[in-house]
Amino acid sequence: MFRFANPDFLYLLCILPLLIGFYIYSIVWKRKAVKNYGNPDLLQELMPEVSPKRQYLKFWLLFAAITCVIFVIAGPQFGSKLETVKRQGVEIMVCLDVSNSMLAEDVAPNRLDKAKQMLSRLTDGFTNDKVGLIVFAGDAFTQLPITSDYISAKMFLSSINPSMVSSQGTAIGAAINLANRSFTPNETSDKAIILITDGENHEDDAIGAAKKAAEKGIHVNIVGMGQPQGAPIPIGTNNNFLKDKEGNVVVTKLNEQMCQEIAAAGNGLYVRADNTNSALKALQSEIEKMNKSEQDSKIYSEYDEQFQILAWIVLFLLIAECLTLDRKNRIFRKVKLFS
Image 1: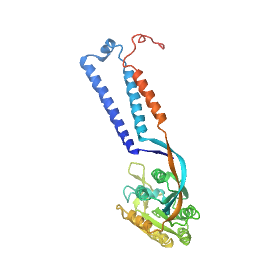
Image 2 (image 1 turned 90 degrees about the vertical axis):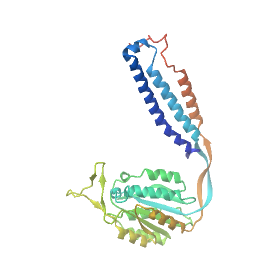
Image 3 (image 1 turned 180 degrees about the vertical axis):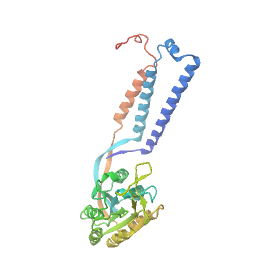
Image 4 (image 1 turned 60 degrees about the horizontal axis):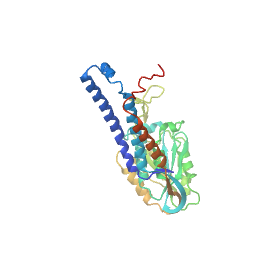
């Protein structure tokens, strides 16, 4: 596993655009200064040793060196020793609807982005728990097997979009069944499924799947995304919306009744997400009620420093920058091998 020992230093990367901006400003200022003395073409003949290309090269060598230095002080590391530790926690499988209807904007910024924001904040509150991620539309796929690696969970979460599942629909039952099979075997800790969907175009026996999960002691919690009155589905960036075969704008509505029935069958919680944090707080409260038990987790206990290669690159870049002269060599300036 790769990580940075001091990730806060990566904020120094913000100075790189400022350096580029300052360099561009200095070039513009120099050109204006030269024009004040006369025609730049005539002045170029009077300064044959001046080499703008060499000056550009020196800047980019220094720029690359500064970039590498920032990564060096951030402390790149690779995990070298994997250990199994005992932790008190629960297991949670998240099933996230990625159908096109989740792009509706009746919840800001849209249903899918709101769900991702909520899950990211929920993950921030985990300590010794395990979490997995399933995405579904017309079919369900495991995006992240159950793990205690929250960094990977948030990374996978940020990359989710509707194009991940080609077949459209809302296969809630398939997602619940897949989640049932994804928990760690023989673990005694409480298990729960958090299913986030608008419930539209429901296709399979989700209630039956939720009942099977409840029989195993797995609670199925539902978060309804959207509003019952519905909203159109944006396409592209020009205020275009999805239309049916007759040319009418499709309005996607939250199927709240169906979501409530699934939650009831799964002995879980139903909550509707809105533009507040009420749904997040309800989920956090529900997780706190779960019984935590001792479970095995594999973690990296030792890390090897990986800054050496970057340090050598920095040294090479600085030496190259120092050896690159601002001006052309007087001996070789008239040599034109390719003329």
